[in-house]
Image (cartoon, rainbow, N blue to C red):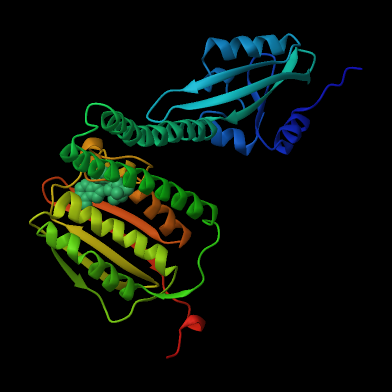
Length: 350
Ligand SMILES: Nc1ncnc2c1ncn2[C@@H]1O[C@H](COP(=O)(O)OP(=O)(O)OP(=O)(O)O)[C@@H](O)[C@H]1O
Ligand SMILES: [Mg+2]
């Protein structure tokens, strides 16, 4: 039974599909396209030829097969600043006025899926590499202590000290990974406790005073008496500690680090500013990726795992706040975050 469908009927079918979909007539002109298809393909429009959207031979060949009555599939890669891969299923879905088969193209943008898969693979490779480095060093020392240095008391003391550093490093990495996964799991549930961000600032500055002294770094704090926010005290302290620790580690030697807390509208902001070497522009958007470091060796020798800013970003996201990084080479950096102000009903009365 042959059914001739009208353009309106093709348009209705295409509009009802959840994925990107378009129908083209026997000559290759678009007769219908849904909103999803227009989002995926900027150049698609009713009346335009399909080659305005796809020119790759594999896609055109698959369309030809479908026109002859056989379902087919192809992928199209859009090159550019951001590479995008579109998966296309093609099927003949009837005749347009007896001139040949109308082909339905169903489109799925695979870019996000591929990105997630790449990130997952990178993450496993990075985590294994970060664990393997201290592990290899531990194994080396154990073998030396079992062999050539068996009776060398001086070497033993020195090796055990280094082994402790490597073991602590592995423990820290595991703690950070667990911390990251815990935060990710709870990211959809914003905290609802009343917290004072000014207290977080004062306590963090106090806790890191010794680290700063050792680096001859001067920490200055400027914040009001109270900054009432909705948040998790421990997590916000974790964010600020990492920012201040980074500022001391990477920029604060013989220099100043400023912590400023202030209320701006309906959010409380904290800015950690340093006057160190700054960070080149190309690195800035990537700093919050797991394990991303400007100088991996430099970070490792300082005991860093490259997870601090990734954890900070996820904590701020969980708080429905914002996280900003500004940096100028040769001048220094400012890392800021905000969290929503405490709701009136939550203010604790002392
Ligand atoms: N204030 C800063 N000045 C210059 N570079 C910085 C600053 N803060 C962070 N960075 C760069 O960003 C990278 C990522 O920071 P992040 O806190 O995520 O990791 P880390 O400090 O290396 O390790 P961890 O925080 O796990 O100890 C650092 O390795 C460093 O290269
Ligand atoms: Mg850090």
